[in-house]
Image (cartoon, rainbow, N blue to C red; front, side, top):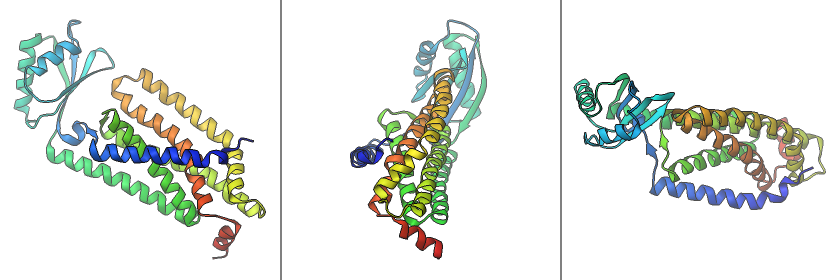
Length: 295
């Protein structure tokens, strides 16, 4: 049996440091919001000439003085995703861009898709994204509070907070773009992390009813080991799929898959070294469970 509880204090210190650094990064550096949240234009371009590449497109757009322009390949070598952070998102502005681009690289391309996001819409999307994450955390808190005792609820929420904050801190540190797909990934992380925690908490509560002479410090370790095979199998199979998406899904899916990979790793880690040490610190015992059962 692996003695996980032996490292509770060490990993608690590491997690605390990572959370503090992540909060400082978010406060002082902030997040790199994409077109979804800042507004601008999204163009899906297909080239009909092999001479057209990211470098030639970047030079052409830089000469248009449109502000920050991000160009990525996706799908195959002839497809490009272009994100322009500009205030003028009218159809006339798109026609001007198309004309200037034709003058620069010829007419061997076509715009397959054009999406415009105005400042008002982008601010509403940002607000909706924040509300969605906040509501999901509140719903999880309520669910755990109803299903378990308040000590378990606190541990689960702190584990979720840990996973989400460190993931956002990582994106802030490396200036990775935050868009709607990242919000979807964070919401998925919340669900995955909670699922891992609930599985272990179920076993902890079951063992608390069975063993009255074992302290919570040892009992959490027993419970983790009893659910370890399930945790490893679930995490590894999920990671295999996510790593495949990251490697072969193209740049357009890199952000989403990277956030999910971090979420799975952090969720597995926090279910062991964040959620369970909270129960130890709050001195959960058999009396806690029996008291709840009698109410």
